[in-house]
Image (tube, rainbow, N blue to C red; front, side):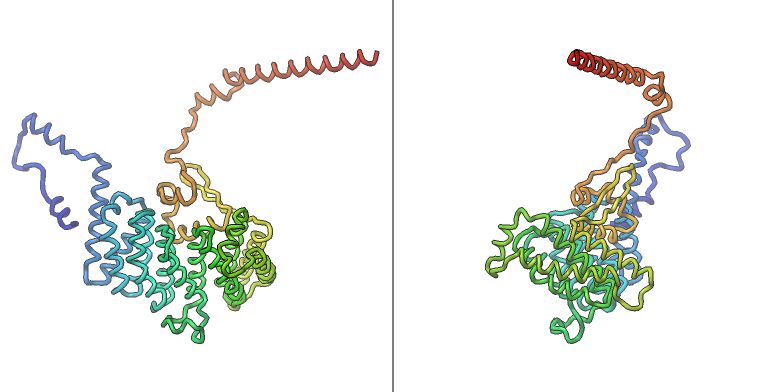
Length: 440
């Protein structure tokens, strides 16, 4: 692919031995002038094909360099047209890097898969990516050699599952894997039979957050109820760990669950019906759990647990839990504002969107604003379509015409105000005269 392009670039379109040229030949050569935008797209495509070819190389350093370049390309622009044609090749190569690569190559390939699905968007391609990649990512998440590559795999699983939007066993299996990692307490835990390597606190926190991201996209039905009843008690236990990361992730997941439940109270009858097989009173269980969880979270808002952390980290933890407690008690989520290129501001004020926003911000890093500005997938997720062009500012002459005291607009505005004032004064005079006649 790329090599063919390099050979073509070496071809000359003219003959250097000719001293003269006819009018017709001059005209013909002018037709060969390439539009600068087309030339830029051509060069970008050639670069991307070069990165893909490098992923076939045997040397790991070359593949890693290509992955870094691909990640920069995915975050720096929206490559949807190119990826539409090449996503199958890319996914196959990225999965190959996950299967055979070193720790650093595996982590890069896992992130690149997440970026690939964000570029592809929801639909059949995203569902195929999830089906092909999830077994390999799950293996890395459970058995990876270090925490960083396992976290990359966990977060990639969450993004693939979220974007694919599949409402079947595929997402449930991913959520089960993430929950297994999140609740793995050590060698004595029942999950040791799965062959999982003990996860670090950072990995467990990432698994909780990734699980919550997928839950945020779940429909309010029996599937949601199963997650709530099976996992609320475990989240309560996670609040008592000594890890600030796990505590915060568990607190946010709890706030998400109560937000989803409270925002769908009008569906409470159908919700209770969905778990009637367990003869469970949904409302009573939610209320009972709420009291216990609030008590734990209030304690953490006063004195955050965890050893080996700085005062700043502990202060941030306390502040976070004050916000979480307010979210559950008052239904108010801390607001986040994202200012975009042309002055638009994306406002986030729910835990559903906050968790989703944080996941995409981490994945896209410095490319988040570019994708939020131009990626239609993010527009759909956040229900926000920013302007694609800067709002035209008025010239000095236009400002004089519209805003100066002598402008036609200002004079017209003054006339309207004077007319309204005259009518009001006339009404007041009539009112006073009427009152005087009544006195007589």
